Image (cartoon, rainbow, N blue to C red):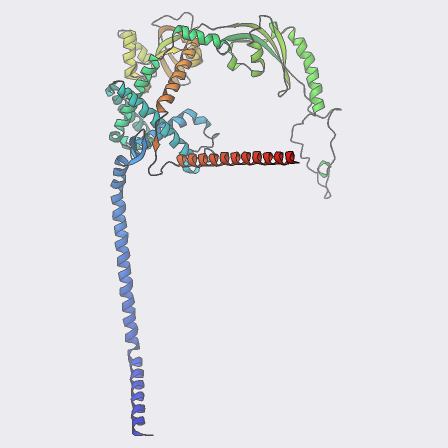
Amino acid sequence: MSKNEKVTENKEQKEQTEQKVMTKYDRKVQKRKEEKEKEKKEERISTAIGIVVLVALVCLVASFPIRTYLATHETYVVVNGEAVNKVEFDYQYNLTKNNYITQYGSYLTYFGLDTSKDLSTQMYSDTLTWQDYFEQNAVESLKQNKALMAEAKAAGFTYDTTDEYNTFKETIKTSAAAAGVSDKEYVRSIYGSYATMGRIEEYVKNDMVMNAYYQKLQEDNAPSDDEIQSYYEENKATYDSVDYRLTTIEADLPTEPTELADPVEETAADTTGTTDGTAATDSTQDTAYQPSDAEIAKAMEDAKVLADDAEQTVAKDGEAHENEKKSSVNYLISDWLFDDARKAGDTTVITNDNSHCYYVVAFEKRYLDETPSADVRVIIPTEDKTGEEILEEWKNGAATEDSFAELCKKYTQDTSAVENGGLFEQVTKTGMTEELSNWIFDNSRQAGDTVAITVSDTSYVLYYIGQDQPEWKINIKNTLVSDTMSQHVQDITADVTVEDPKGKLNYLKVQAEESAAAETETATAETQEITEEQTAATEETATQAQ
């Protein structure tokens, strides 16, 4: 080995030795160092996360006033060229929804609507949720209201809302107290999460002005007596009443098989026992017997004999039906009763195959009920006053119609009737409970008569003003006014546009998709029709060429 080779070897050995020595003595130190670095890294990450969380919380808290500001200032939808913010939209949405729930409360379950659950998860139709449905109705109401308000302003119509709005505020306070919540909580629960009395004041007052203007239009478009009479002449069957007698003869259907019963094939289920010795269960034991067609026909044939016999005596022995409108008469006999050819003493036998019976009918008379309606004032006492106490206070005072109206403002729980002193005009027999109706329409009733009546734990104090127009005239008037106003609203809203700049209204998307699909289907059908025509023309040309 040369000197140089030896030096190189010694150098390598020295480096290896130094490496071994460092590893041996510094391993623990190195590990500690790495652990400290890890701890520092984790600390930095934790700090960073803490900062992010803190920032997020700050942003969340800060977002509350931001969201409120946006709800009150940012455009949610645009109706008739007017920007509608979230507060106004929610106000109209909740009015629409609450009115619907109030109107159809007992039928909501049949509609598949559960108001305790998220409306966006419940389907109104195949394509729309209940939320979509109420949003659509809210937009339609906004279209109508803004069109009417624009028309009212153009016509110079004014209406002082002071008294009505004060009554509204008192109603809110009373309702909130009854619900056991604050005024603010109650307003939010009724009109939306961003609603306050201050924020909805403008919309409430606008609705009051719009309603007043609408009532003026109704009064302006009230039909004349000649128009009412003309409409009656064209629709007599709708408004006339009939008196008749009715006897129902039901077919005596067998409850057990007869010789006319359909043959029954025996099955294992029909046997009286099983292989293990236990009694078998007949699946039809708890089911009512279903007669065969032949058995039903025989029973109906026998009933017809009885019905023909009853026709001879129905005018005397039949059940009396008086003053019934066509809409309330069984549809199977209504056309016969209201036939213009009908005369007193006519009888007939009409078959009801669905119910397996015969209607034996005797016609007595047809007429226009001229019974007048009535105008009354009504107080529904609050809990701290009885009807008798209110009536006694009235008797001890001026005892006039005006003083009764003042007591109504003071004591009635019917807030909607406060402003007009409990006045109900053109009340009909069918528009009141039987107890109230019997008193109001008693033949001895005189103007100024009063009474306190309790019906189903509800007290009423009544003041009789006098007679008004008969019910048929009122109904026709309301129909004609309704038709006129519907057409008017349709005309003024025909060009009202709705813009959804932020895509908030899902029903508009659904409508657009359905419209596009319909156009595609129409185009496809037209193309197919053209193709078929071209094919037919080609075939005809080929035939002629042959």
